[in-house]
Amino acid sequence: MENNAQWFARRLTQLRMQKGISARDMSLSLGQSESYINKIENGKALPSMTVFFYICDFLDITPQEFFAQDITAPQEFRRFTKECGRLTPQQLEHLMALIRDMRG
Image 1: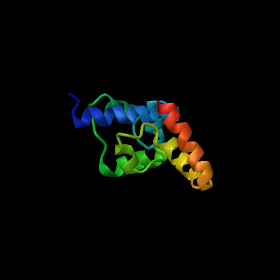
Image 2: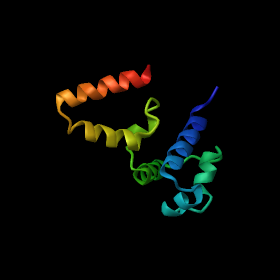
Image 3: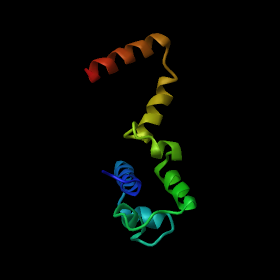
Image 4: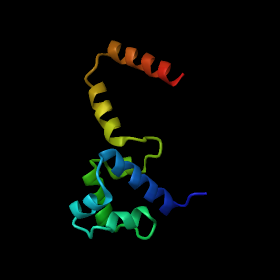
């Protein structure tokens, strides 16, 4: 069974890879040593609360989105919901029908 630190490390890896950036480049962008993110992803460290907020800013997500286990791609989900807000009720219903069809 996965503990919280393992889940955190896996989630960080997932979100970083979705952004298409290396652990080294992310570490340096956050003003940390080049191995900082790698240490977190390997379960050897956890970020301070301040650095966690910087990580979220860097990934362009909120802390809530980081921990939302049912949203695999929070950046894309936010863009999707923003676009949905611009649709008419009829367009939204068509979209919902498509989503239901895709989910089987």
